[in-house]
Image (tube, rainbow, N blue to C red; front, side, top):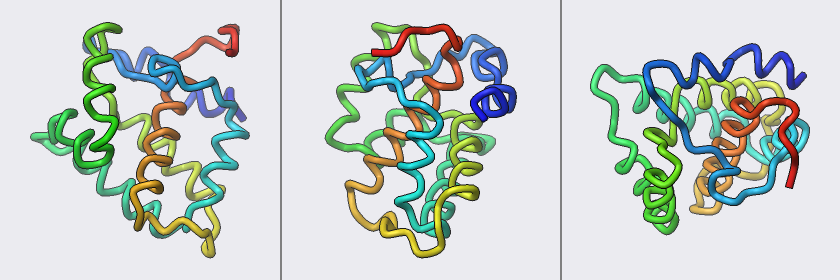
Length: 149
């Protein structure tokens, strides 16, 4: 399953045009497996998570996309400054990107039940979604031989 996900959004596609993305590992989050992320996704109410992720995808892919700092401050006001401060240190230009969001949408379609308990109504729900997005980025962009923490 990891190979299929990696094939869907190879690192070369994500990092083309000089873009460098922030991953969960860059922020000190432990490396998750696809199975771990699928389990996290299964906590969400499918339609609620899809609605939020579709809005994020539109914000990221619009002809004049929202600024990454604005998205972070809206989604994670308490962590935005930490992430924004880490970006220059690792040379990152983006936090949210289309391949990451689309792959999470795929996971939601596959694993989030219609009766999931998280309805994307509380700050903790958005925090978990963003953590999953960041860890998904690490999973997509790291080589399969990278060591786990």
